Length: 340
Image (tube, rainbow, N blue to C red; front, side, top):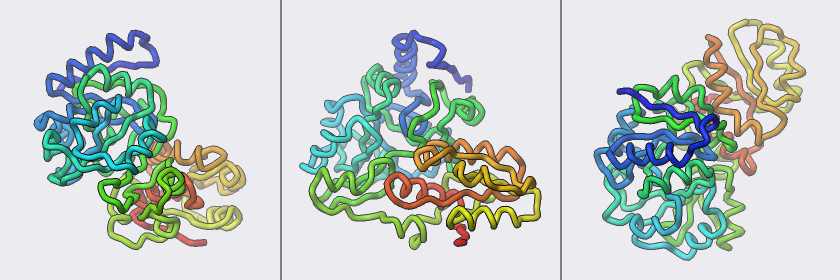
């Protein structure tokens, strides 16, 4: 397959580019596009055969449902059968943005999108390029993250072409994803609102809007996995990943004592700048949890190219977006964590 590639940061004729991308989508093709969370791999959500191409390109298990992306609220009417009061409040507050709402689906949504479930996830990206692309298509776009299944999601255009060229019809490259972790996924299909995947928008943020408890993830779940789902292989580089959980001093001492020269560490500036062991390959997230979340996938991929035996990564406080960070990191490490 020949993949057509546009760099949106270098070509200012976005109207023409989005028109070309829409032609691909409406002809049953696949298009990679930027969002504020991670890059997505999209197809017409109403086209069953087109959606199946997503699974083939990603080598993704067919029993894994997809999120449907919209550019305006009018698109929801044909996708769901009921919008609860909770959903309306949350859409008013967080759409567009990094929030996916699980609602009862309509008969127009193919089983390939929902994995045969009676629900579908809906999200409206806040990224202007994503929104412009979807609007040009005129149809909702089913899209998981744009990467080979089980690998770290892609937040940087460098890896889009490297990993997906020849597997999709078109790639729309742009800037690095500013959030860097996938959207919060919230089930609002019943009266009991449940957090299915943590993201930038926290359970506390949601509770303030709907005025009731959100069930699901908490900090303990993220730091000490208790369910098979937390240990499912996902977001994984080829190199073994181990999480280091401790204070700055304990992590620095642990890394300075390592004798092997085939290990790497990814952490915040205040740790990486104090490690004296020259045998350790170091990469810094930046100064805080926002930097760590934004750069996690990119630096896992960068460190993976160093041909190491092990990558150590700093654990973070499981509050706010730290919960999402720990959720993704522990899956990348298959739950392998050292408490210092």
